Length: 395
Image: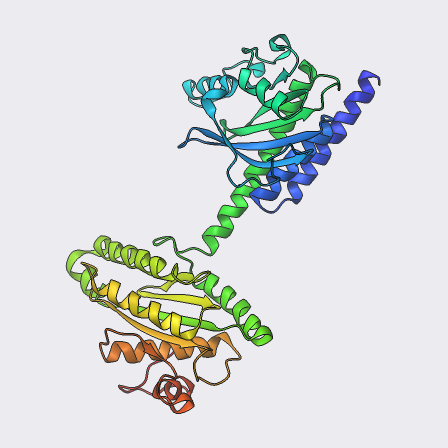
């Protein structure tokens, strides 16, 4: 193949990688697209993308593609390696951070890739130089691979991880041009990974309460619609626990909003802890001093038990005055639940009764008389009038 043809082939590979990265919607998809694109572009039999976990000092493998060795998984649960075993990466990180993370003052080759062979040291071919890496060579031999090329993935001027591509024994060894090309591929991958990480963060923020880190009302509405569809189709039990934190206004007025925020955060932690007792339960802050748990699957009795635990733990907080809790579950005699609005109104009405009675236990819709239950009648009554037994429930 002529140099021009080879250049055209590699240009097409870069374009294909960029397109694949643009089509990825999650960080996991993005990492896989990067590994597959690099494997094809460099003619490898195997490729991987790893992320540097700074706080742990490890390179954690996100994805393996191609011919996997024994024990390797496409999406490993816990495959990681100490960073100090890879002096090339450590040196790269040190150079970047010593210079404040800037690229402009360093030679371009200093951020490049390098190659390694299972047969013999290849330091002369390694872009940027570097010592013979016994750990990488041992890993190549252990996994039946002949050579590899590695390039750092850099986001915002700082090392994020690495792109790794290997070939079988007996195939042509990677050389300096391959290391340079791997560096280009890693840069394209970095742009795609940064984009999907930003999108993932935006999605997370859109469904997360900023103060407590719990889900927000938007997340509850979406999950509840999905849960009720499952209830209609398969009869799954759907339960909603609505909580009104007592005493928040008094804390804000007497001790300031910073202390009030601390109360909200502490109760959010208690809510999360109790919700974790029921697998798959969503813990959320609806807004202000109102929170909820949304459980799909556990029985109504299990949910009420957890709601009681929540009341007990909230009463032990050193701030506020406990919590008023209402429960509505399709597993209780509350009549048909065709909409999220009705389940919310039932839980809301139960919570209102708990608050009015200053109850230290949860009030459960349908617990006393089925459709004739006072909570059910309150929730299902027409638009509420003013008075001690009425309030405007959620629409």
